[in-house]
Amino acid sequence: MSQSGLTAAAQLYDQARQSLAGGVTAGLRWHPYLSRPFYASRAQGPYLYDLEGERYLDFNMANGAVLLGHGHPAVNEAVQAGLAAGILTASETEHHVRLATTLCRVIPCAERVRFAVTGTEAAMVAVRLARHVTGRRKLLTFAGHFHGLAEPFLFRPADQTGSGLPIPVSGGVPDTYGQDVVIVPWNDPDAFDHALTRHRGELAAVICEPVHYNAGCIPPQPGFLAYLRRRTQEEGIVLIFDEVLSGFRMALGGAQAYYGVTPDLCTLAKAVANGLPMAVLCGRADLMEQLSPGGPVAHSGTYSGQLLSVLAARATLEALEAPGVYEELGRRAERFYGELQSIFDRAGVPARVQGLGARFGLYFGRREPVVTWAEAVACDQALHRRFVLGCLRRGLYFHAYAGLPGHAGFSLAHDDDCLDEALTVIENVARELARQREA
Ligand SMILES: Cc1ncc(COP(=O)(O)O)c(C=O)c1O
Image 1 (cartoon, rainbow, N blue to C red):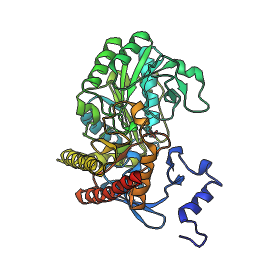
Image 2 (cartoon, protein in one colour):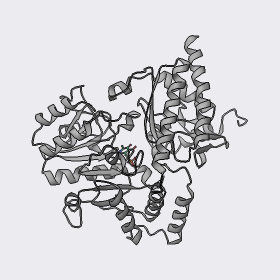
Image 3 (spheres, rainbow, N blue to C red):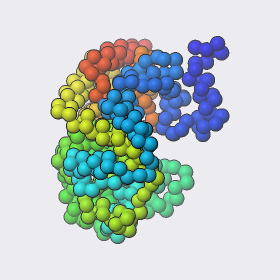
Image 4 (cartoon, rainbow, N blue to C red):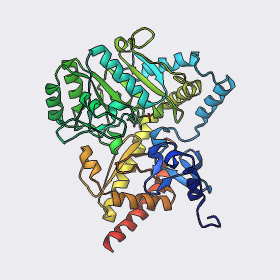
């Protein structure tokens, strides 16, 4: 604590607001429960360190971008090699080809790949490709699924049925763009089917998060992904899986490998390069070959396939391909989520834990399974706030997104000891929450 009584973080935030719009470099980096961003000074393995050097066991892991752990040695070494090569922005190298070859081997839908910088960009290009190959304009999305901040994705449904015109969720997005967007509830085959019938011959693409991690963690109901696959094929619609969060999270081939349902196109980002900025668009060769220069669909970019990210991705995939990685990840996940749920149950705190692979959702105020976005947003935010602040005070970092369910996660650097440490802390927080509820 400084002499003025303000922490270093509060002082820095005061200063930030004089130059950074809103005091942050990304809107969702503002932590609603701290009323400022969390300022990190460094990160290592499963830990984040604040400005005063205090250590936090990290359960955000860069919004899911870091799966091997912060500062993974093989990734650091790969980036060093890129620096030594002269960074080589806007140049193709052998590493691009090798990374593409690996992705085509491990991602079921990937017959061709294209590198991009952000998940938003990859999703935008996927939709553009789908519009070109189908000659149609409309896009079907699912309520609450997040595909980045490009215009087609900045809408919410006007009503539960998906029949009203979607409403923009950002300033600067013309209402009229909503005419090309159809939004239906996730895990509801009847609503999906109804929308397909209503917009027959108009839909270019259906895009979804195959596991709805942006709502915490809502897996598809059994058979739902296969149903999307079958119906889109019947209607000549391009099926896009946005695997920006689900990619590599529970299987090397992502949710499409885990559930055995292959989309036409898929987007990857985040975990693919363990924290370096990198996204991938991949899919069927006949679709992907429509991209420039071979086809008429525009995609290029100065930083597409930036060498440091490509090398980081190669190192990341090599680490993820090591024998036993996903068995171990699955074992830790199952134990951690099971014990978390028991802690809340024992303490008498109403909370539901849902996780798959290395990411999970915590839903306060309910014990029943969460299967829709509406259920996820209706959870008890005040209790979530008390939980997150209680954890922060005891050295566990959970991020939060204002008004949104948010998601949490661990990494392969979170070994059993780390997870035990977290469970002990959470047990104390849960008891505190239970006492507050009684008072
Ligand atoms: C599922 C999903 N798709 C797309 C995006 C957008 O990715 P980016 O932030 O790299 O633009 C995100 C970001 O969180 C995401 O979770």
